Amino acid sequence: MRREKTTMPLAIVVRALRIWSGLFLLAFVTSHLTNLSLGLVSIEAMDRARPYLSGVWTGQVIGTVLLASLVCHFLLGLWAIYVRPTLRTNTQDIVQLMTGVLVMPLLATHAIGISMAANAGLEFGYVGTIRLFWLGAPTIGLLQVIMLSVVWVHGCAGLFTWLRSKESASRLLHWLYLLAVIIPVVALLGYAEAGREMLAAGHNGAVIAQSPAIPENVVVPFAQIKQITNIVIIGSLILAALTFAARLVRLTLQTTQDVFLVRDGGPQMTSSSALSILDGFELNDELHANLCTGRGRCGTCAVRIIKSEFPLPSPSELELRTLYRIGAPSGARLACQVKPDGGRVEVLAVYPADYTFEDARPLDEPSASEAPA
Image (cartoon, rainbow, N blue to C red):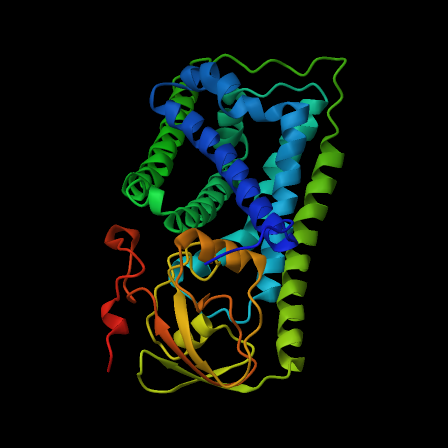
C-alpha cells in the first residue's frame, strides 16, 4: 500500500503525547517503588539511594515536567473517554480507563506537595517520612501506598497495550509481566519492613536519626499546599464526572443509521454508524484480532473490504501509517478506524481472530478465516 507523505496530523501528535507522558509518569512511579523496596535492607539504605531514585524528581525543572505530564496525560485520557463510541471492551481496557480517572487526584497530593515543598527549600528523607507514615499519620501512609498501586496498575496496563502493538516487543512482554508483579510486591514488602523497623525502634526506646529540621530561613507554605492539592483533587474528579456526562449527552443526541456487517461470509451482524467495524464485532460478541484494543497501532484488526453499500470514510493519516507499516494488501482498512455511514458491509479478516505476533506470517498468505465458504 502506498502512502503519500503528509504533515503530521493532530491525532498522531495527541497519541504521541499520551504515550510519552504516560511513560514519564510510569518512570516516576517505578523509581519510587524501587526506592521503597530497599526498605528490605534498612531505612538507611532507602535514604542513601534516595538522591538517585525518588530524589531526582524533586528538582524544579523535572518537577515542572512531571506536573505537566500529569496534567497532559489526565486531560488526554478524559478526551479519549469522551470520544469513545462505546465503553464495551475487555477487562484490561476498563481497568486502564478507571484507574486513569483516579491518577490525577491520587498523584496530585504527592507530586504537587513534594514539588512545592522542595522548591521552598525543604529536603525530605525516608527516616522522617517513614516515621510520619507509620507513627504520626498512618492514614496518609496508606493513601500513598494506594496512590502508587493505582498509578502502577494504570501505567502497566497502558504499557502492555502499547507494546502488544509492536511485533518487536512480543517476546519482551513475558519478562515485563513478571516485573509488573515483582516490583510492587517487593516495594510493599520493603515499605512494611521499614515500618517494622521504625515501630521496633520506638518500642525499644531506640533513637533513629531524625530528619534535618526545617531551617529558620525556609518557609514551607503547608496551608497553601493543602489548599492547592484539595482544589486539584476536587477539580479533577468534577472534570471526570463532567466528561462522562458530556459523553452521555453526545451519544443521546447523536443521529445514527443501522449497519449490517458480514465477516468471512458468516451470519449478518447488526451494528450502528456510531461504531467502528471492530466495535460492531464486539457488540455482537464476535472475536476479532486487535492487539492494541482498537487504538490503530497494531494493524491486526485489518479487514479487506469486499462490498459496502455506501462509500466508506477516507482513511486518516493514522490509519494510513499503520496500514503502510504492516504492508496491508490493497483494499484493506483497519476495522477499529472505519465507521460505516450505514447499510451492508462485507469484509474478510486479514488476520485470524486469535492472532498474536508470535504467529507472525506474511500478509499475502491467506488465513483460515479467508478460506472460501
